[in-house]
Length: 253
Ligand SMILES: Nc1ncnc2c1ncn2[C@@H]1O[C@H](COP(=O)(O)OP(=O)(O)OP(=O)(O)O)[C@@H](O)[C@H]1O
Ligand SMILES: [Mg+2]
Image (cartoon, rainbow, N blue to C red; front, side):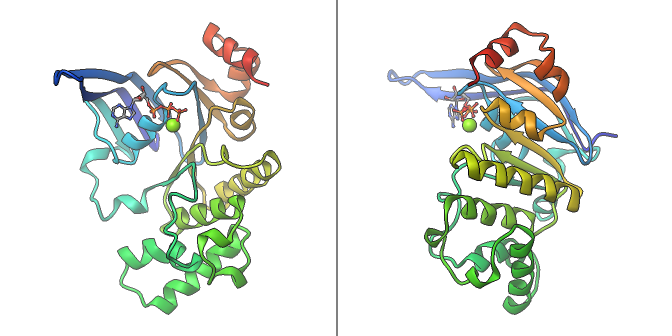
């Protein structure tokens, strides 16, 4: 059984026009795919094609209009809200916006356990420091605030926080897009290391094809909310079947 199974997923946003009429905008159309345990799925596609919307639906930040999502065989919507953060976690593009500027590094990382588990602050701090080491942050920096870290370090903080509850699936929405190219490679290699260590499945969203090619086992190409191609990354990148994938590859630097 797949860890994640998505069938005919549809998502519409309803917006109001200037005249007050409601308008339905279909953002995801008949999206179907499977993700196995320990697998990294890359999602690529142009701006506005629905990548973040898909991530938000999978993390239950947004509802969906039709279709079926199963996680470990269970309906995603039926999962207990206390259990959910132990199963699926998300890392966002902008580590600055997603980290509380008034909290110290260790508090940010420890937050998920402090919220969900009945443990002391000192125990939570101990676990946060251990996680800092795993993501390559110096424990001496645990009392610092987010603005006192570099972009790459901030993204490591976000990754550490996402891993604190030992989720099975990590969804990363453009996690390295805001970083310098040299730092991107370091964070990608860290993610590959953590994937093995924590036996994670990952969904890695990026508009950068070379990044997805490097990290993902399987690649899904999204075009105006529809999957135009999905398959092992080597095949998608070396023998694209769809003209849109070819176009994306041609336009990549
Ligand atoms: N809350 C919302 N209400 C209405 N429309 C929305 C909302 N969020 C996204 N959309 C629309 O849905 C479409 C897909 O947006 P989404 O953010 O998923 O794209 P994306 O592939 O992540 O793009 P990018 O690469 O720029 O991040 C866009 O047309 C966007 O305008
Ligand atoms: Mg997006």
